[in-house]
Length: 200
Ligand SMILES: Cc1cc2nc3c(=O)[nH]c(=O)nc-3n(C[C@H](O)[C@H](O)[C@H](O)COP(=O)(O)OP(=O)(O)OC[C@H]3O[C@@H](n4cnc5c(N)ncnc54)[C@H](O)[C@@H]3O)c2cc1C
Image (tube, rainbow, N blue to C red):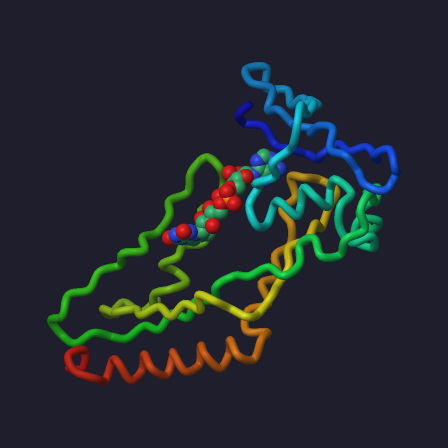
């Protein structure tokens, strides 16, 4: 099934009454040519594999009643499993971008590009806007990425509507070691650009 959004997993308590057993998923179908969105329940034969990405997998769990009790109740969801760990311990890689003006006559090029608006709505934020200086001179940009952060963030629902994106809080640099490592790398980049052969 394409062009469909999973709204939530349907579960029932098992015989012991302790654990919910996944029975199916409720899907919002775009309605195809008719254009009328319809809600379909798809039954499960053996199992459900939840693979909606790091941000939307916890969203589906929380909208299915699996998550922190307080949060689920805030959004009017039935609590099937009280597990405040859902949506927690999110890891995201922070990037620092340093731009340096290049010497006269040295060619440089904007490689990140600027996304064009399309019929899905306004243009998304451009990577180039974030990573490259806005001044008209020629620049070289060096990116430093923290590939193994110790900081842990979260992604949680802000609405009972699956179409409302969850709130991402990456908590970049909340672990002091991340800040220390990133700061040293940024200083190292400043050393590299004044060192041959980059120094001119
Ligand atoms: C800018 C960027 C650059 C990256 N570069 C690299 C790289 O160079 N090398 C690398 O190894 N990894 C890279 N990654 C990471 C990589 O993209 C992810 O690790 C990988 O895509 C995760 O796969 P996934 O299947 O778990 O989730 P995703 O690829 O996020 O797929 C989840 C899918 O579920 C769908 N979905 C979500 N919610 C619903 C719903 N309710 N109903 C129906 N469908 C839904 C989404 O539309 C999506 O198609 C990059 C990520 C980003 C953002």
